[in-house]
Length: 258
Image (tube, rainbow, N blue to C red; front, side, top):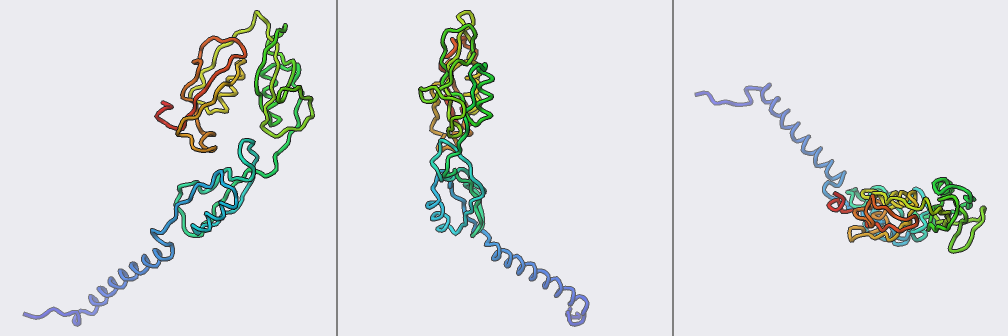
């Protein structure tokens, strides 16, 4: 029986060697890409929010990451100069030396002028203050012919004139009229709303925001911005006298929101 030999089949021999060459090339290319991209050597982005810049640079340097300040905001309830947000977000997987873009809370408070809302209705005053970067604080009702007519505007217990400069997001307390024949309202149902939206709805209904309690799922300021109301007292739909307080309880736990 004649023995089979590739020497006698030059075309077949070249074809087989060609396949071997292609396979070897593919394997080498995959190895090169794995080394070039540091395959399986990704880093987990830490949570920089609420950290000061000295700590941020130290953490980033230890993890072989780079940080770059992309923007700044002013959030009254955060310490000056700390990280407000980041991109990529905490927990993302990135390569070594990846740049992390951060937004910091400005070291200089942003100041705004207080408008005059005396003579406005509560709803008009709320809109005017919001447009100026301010908010409505405590509502106090006194006997008057016109319910929800703004009689005085105050800050920290004292009357405040228009034109006065305050930090943005400061709360202006309002003294409002209350006609004894028109002195009741209904508690709005604010379940499922974020804290800021819930507070706005409560004030719109001539009520005060009472306790704002966050459960254990809310770990930081970023969580508090996304937390929603899962319980309230009194319940939505309850009749109430104007100026009554409504307590709200917030969470980021989806099981409590259902």
